[in-house]
Image (cartoon, rainbow, N blue to C red; front, side):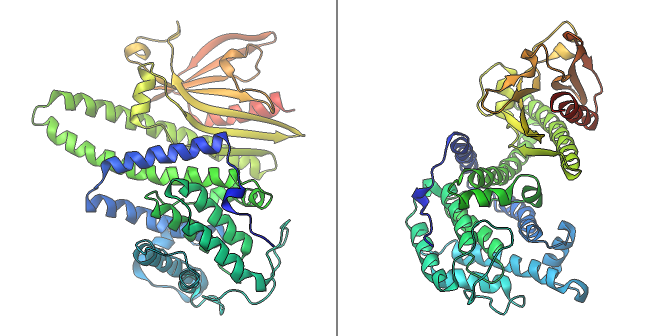
Length: 455
């Protein structure tokens, strides 16, 4: 077996756009630096147990996030769940070792350091901890099987050598490639997935980015294993997109933490009489209220999609980072903003596929708008439909669409849905559903796609 080199993979439009978004977010975080030690510690303490929980959960560990936090905090592992508890303790120690020893090391990409990290990860769990496997392994259901054990050292050395020569600007691609390469080589008898995600994060952190926390839902809903299989076939784009999205989500936490810290500072200025700061604070509060409502709506769609998929109809949910306050304000003011995708739903049934993008744009007033609706500019969640091989088309532009939902926007704490009344000959009129409920909107939309579009 020969390991496909990093430059043997080509990345395309959507992937490159997501990498650019990561770079933009990283630049934003860098603008805040040096962050206060308390702020950095606060974010790190929130990320640390999530990293441990998520990576273990992907491998089948049934500890909850709360149980993981308790074990990491106390170090206590009960006899009843000793293996799962030990997995949490070990992975926590491995993350700490990576950050305290490998991250500042000028030359971390060596065989000895990879084996040492695996040794920490698998202490008390695997007799082969800290050693390459000494036997051939087979992965059930995998199209491509790991190489023979005698090839492992050479393949690992090749991977590490290439990582050491990779420029910082290619960090997202390199991190993804390292993740895939370790999974593909399968150098250990156990712990390969967790090692792959740790090494991925090492590459990202050394480029001043952030860990890509791949969640359990990414395994079950967002095609994590399918993305690894695509890389085996020569297409690194799906896995790179997932890594980029999860890196951006982590960077967003630092941005949000800094913004919240800034809010307190702005509040202090406000009470000293700075009128301009008062206005900025009010706008920020509006944005945070709006963002909470949008996140709740997205969660409702995700839950409904997951339930339908669980029962046999494939509805793939994919999320994107929420637009920040600046982009939100620009949309309200009519200024163009790139990349306003919020989430998408891909339906696959009976050999057909339909994709729906939910993205942000400006709400344009109509006769149905009240004075309250018109009191200030609004950011709306719009929907477009895309068939295979065709461009996406806004539902507003489809006079014959059997789907009723056209737009969602907010007024204060009220969710308002703009829906089309469907007649036999097409759209009859637009109606405003005030006090809309997110779960109801999600259920109705998914139901209409399945029953009116695909069956």
